[in-house]
Length: 497
Image 1: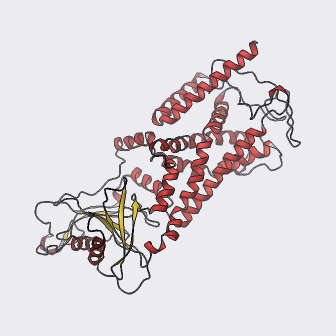
Image 2: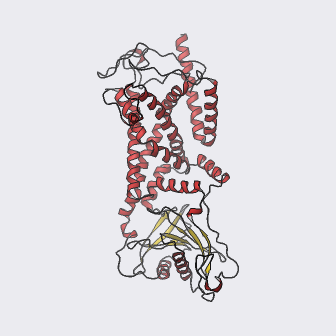
Image 3: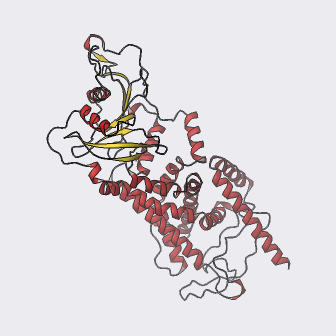
């Protein structure tokens, strides 16, 4: 961040803190420390880290606090909604068709759209209905005891993971603070800047560790120097904890951007252009019921039902589709999507639940039980797989409670890094004389202007690309530049007067 002039640094007054380090005559750095270079990537990273830390960190802090709550939301949901989600195992489950009939008797006014058979011995079956009174991606679910085929309650569920109201409320708090589309800007700003702030901070921390003659090993990047007091100790803990959470922070930043409004749209477009989109099975059926010749397997998957076996009800077709899915080797928890019109197959795919790392899917002709299409997760494009795993990890559903605790620890670490960063800024402030101010001075200006063209031009090009791909980053960079220009003009006027 730079303008055409370099801001002169006034001598810093001595700190009022008794444990503050001695200050060199230039007032820029503690005595014995190498001052920040006027040019080069370190100086630019320092100024960018400073501006983003002061102005963007509050948004990241809110995202981290709400993200910590979001991380443990699946476990909270299991506790709060235990009566809906679990039953006591008692004998042999009733046929799925009976469970579906029991649920449709509760909500005969709503169209049936999907069924999720009980995935475990103590789980309930979910029968899902479309409800025009609900919001986008919301459905109404009737929960059925699979052993008695009796409904135990109903609730609104949200998204592909079937989140119940508590988890949905926490999800929206994290995503948009319950402010709707305008609120999504906060989370997009936080997610878009997080990886930039972290990478700039790691560059600065690496340089700081390298300056310690006795601690030039890479292992010291993880170890704060506890021998110092005051601001150096704060900076040391700030840098070391930042390195600890670096991998998770970067992953959460990238996956979080996929849900954003502007950067998310560009990510979707990029995935489409590179054929990284999530594939799906075809549910188109021929006019005649599909049957397997000579009683064999259709497409080599599962035995087909006899052609004369017609469905007596929608529930019977759902059970037939589920039976064919199990016979095809898909035994994990699935959701059976009910076709909206005749001439379409039932799309059955694995649900996004802890311990399920694939999304295998089949299309089944409900009239005959024949598998009409199949898509194994192994056939997905690599980037589609990585995207699915990243999103599942971000939601705390990759490997259950351990996933959630890891995210909780990462969010706690991120909160601590931000708090320590602000504490360091506060400790750097002048406390005496005319130079007293509420916070520390910004690092020396002119970093980019003082760099060689071979470095400056690629950095400017990279900034333009990032600003286009993540528009909120580009907009905020322009705001930082405007603030920087105003600060420079103010300093020049003071110097002239």
